[in-house]
Image (cartoon, rainbow, N blue to C red; front, side, top):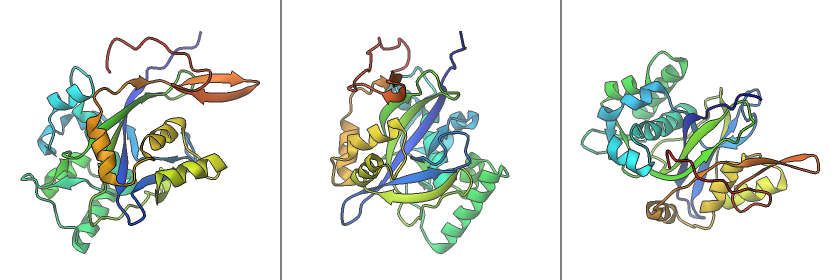
Length: 269
């Protein structure tokens, strides 16, 4: 029997901005040469790194005790929040940060140029993300970052992730841009539009991405999404299943035909 891979901890963030026609969400297209979900549109995110767990002194608005309560973990959950915002910076160039006293840094041209230079250094491995924050006198701003979903890759794929999904507002005065390495395009789109394009076959997305978009597509304003996120009392762990229908492979989840309910795991909510 093949070994069942243990899912790697990961985090991803649905980043929103309001526009006259309704709020939009940031989506990035994965490199077509990527070994993992090549060409798919995803939210910024990735695996939790070892350094993400040592960022308490450069975080405003949340501590590990509260974060761990929210994620139903015995400890260490702040690392998921840090990972989500680190990936947002590395993959999309958006830094959700403030000064230690909570005031926001100015989004002028000089700041934008400095952030771009830091991003290149971080992505090249010449500078660590946390060292960059300390040098700039900044802290990650977690005051309005909300935990909204928990998805685990089903058994079968060569890579498995245990992913926490968050929602946050895009920082003012910053422009999102792909990194031209892991991601090759950055797009702001209405969730309802993305879902229609996916149904038409013109926008490739993973099953959890589609389900999370569907969960918020009914809202018109970003504030409505955040109010919904704050209202969530319990967030279940969802592990989709791979089913064979007449020789065609499908991914199914709760509420889908062919999904078999299984007992919830005893650890981690």
